[in-house]
Length: 175
Image (cartoon, rainbow, N blue to C red; front, side, top):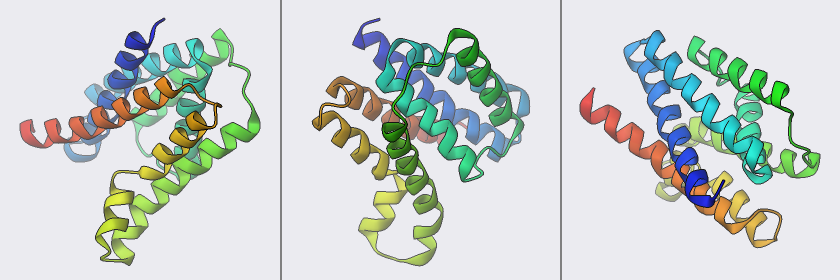
């Protein structure tokens, strides 16, 4: 699998992850949000099985969101089950617990900051920083700069993030 396909799967995951969540949270649409969640699970498992760097990112997203109790709907539960089941059946990639923990802490920081910072300060920089969840972007960039991750995974992760934001814009515009 080349980086174009990886980028496509990262984009697919980011877009459908956000769109699924907005469908569930705003429209209370269980069926379509669950179907989109399953697409997310399949895309993220495909990437995770092919690329260990991506596995760190996607597994940390799953674990981090579980820890901060963001798995809050049937669409999340089904997505989690599909992701975990396929990953366990296919075989979890061998991961460094230290690197995985660093990524999990990045996700947790982003999620907590995203929820708390806007209520705690009017600082525009901090609000922007946590609105767009920059902690994990910095973590992935630093891991790439240090040679732990391939720099192209950082590029793919940025594309995931852009697709995630784009899905929110599309949802607001056409909903």
